Image (cartoon, rainbow, N blue to C red; front, top):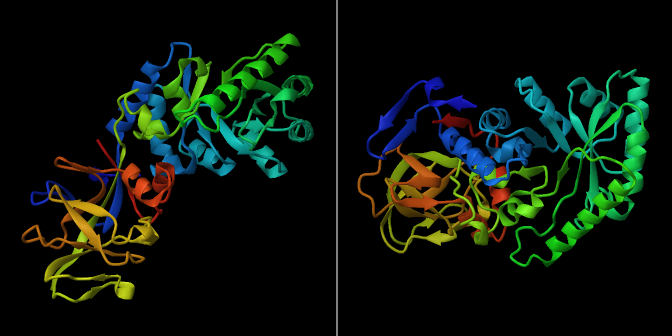
Length: 395
């Protein structure tokens, strides 16, 4: 993660009222103040007994995992969630000492050795996996109990043991040497749906599973069920911890939740104009000539394309911001470049900054806007920005 102070040649560009990055053609800006604000808002929103797990898998949804993790912990998150062992190791190598839960399944000897070495916390999804962990740690002469999180399937039909076998599963893990139950959790399939019928059924199943476990005399140290949507929907779903991803990054998991809490988008996508030209009426633009100029127009070429994570399927559908004004993208989006119709804005110059996602003046374009156009979700948009785009931290 770079910062403006770390990149040479950064000067204010008065024409576009932002910073021109003369060393970059395109980049992702990460607003650390907005990130910290969101985490603090979420912590305040939760009951005092409920901890916040910041989910930073997939490189913190494309925001830069180590920097996001640092800010999240400093701002009140108690622990972190990732999908894979390498993601967790990256955080440890970045000097992150907070507890890290691996949300994905881990089975191999190499994974178990790395989990023990780096003091990570795995998810156990089945009795077979629990036995493999115990036997492997025994063979390693592992001398301290490894915190593990037990995953129950209450209706997601993904990872986890069926909730009806919760008592037997937890009892088995409790008896195994070298394993210490850190939490029991499940995941909700429809928490972002205004119709809460399925979520309520999963909630009931989770409660029934916990009742089974307690009836066996087993004390459960920590329970967690809620993702971003559930955390913003119903406080009865908060339990001891919530696992929040999208809301940390300032986006709402569903339109009907936008009034639940005040959040600020953390990510902006920016690029620079690389050439400006005038084309005549009837001129085709880009591959396939899917756009034909209806009149003489001024065209700006921008140094970003689908190889950077701008979906090609947005061709001739998206808009961008330049000097605080909306302009239309024209022609097929190519691997490294796209074109804008800037006829309405006089004297556009090479080097000016274009905002593809983010805010300029009174105008704003969000990942939700792209997702709606593409009939997908904002999570996919955020995770799609490739690593050749530098992540630039701003305050």
